[in-house]
Length: 198
Image (cartoon, rainbow, N blue to C red; front, side, top):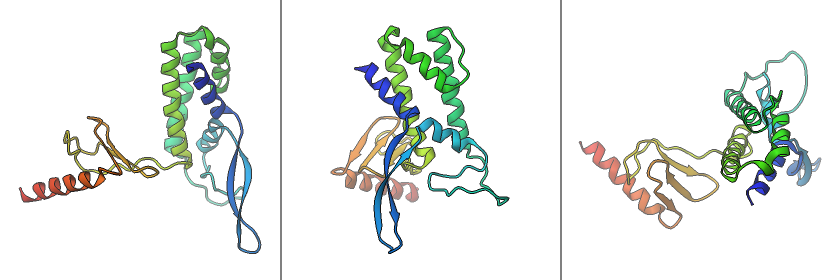
């Protein structure tokens, strides 16, 4: 049910959850321990602060140099906050000071929201979850080679996912799986040879 998906996404955004982390011991051996990670919104908020580093950064104060602001995190945080607050005003009639409060207000009125609106919210929240995981370094974004799609010739629109053997064109939605990647490779090679022959 779509409401269950909404609640699952909300939980990922705000709730702390256990993760497995590999650490080394004094003998040089690695072992897996369980640590608690903040919700994705908390992690994104931490990444927005100037000097915030990635998920593996060690803490510590001092006067040392700090990395600059992570622009991708700032942009995504602003988009999420603005949209969640807008949804809260639209569906509840109340302004909310934070994204967390907006999620709480939306959860309160979720049963009264029409299915199509809830489905649109779930779709957008799923997209945000994926983008937050990319920005925070938990997952790698897809590789985007600057080559034309063999089907529609759209330049730079192929996406290659590193965790899966899958390539897709964002324009014509053609896709290649592990079984057909050789065909894609051959078509791209032929396309490159024809381009250089001109």
